[in-house]
Image 1: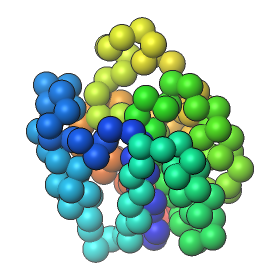
Image 2: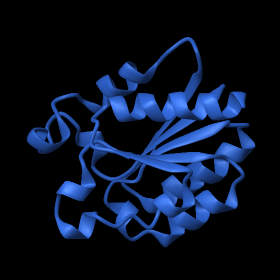
Image 3: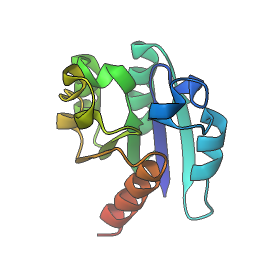
Length: 141
């Protein structure tokens, strides 16, 4: 199974950016944490909305079976990412390291989540693994 893991703005700074909220694991360590022989991962990380959209579009071309996406702050206002997710026939699950519902009120709403089959929030790096497992289970059915 092929999974694309997309991470948005500032996630490249994991480990040093607000570790009390996002944890001490670096972005590289997060990617290593997700690797398994059970599936093939393609990673995309960008601080630029257009690169994320291009990655979503490329998922279809690459034969990706599912997308795990953490759009970061873009999840709260990027209708362009929402539309990109809707434009490809690839199931996506939105993940957030922190519990966005327990933070500032502007983080409570995600416009991109509506284009996904589900959302996992607040479970740290384990949320990514759970999203991958869910996508694998969905694909098997």
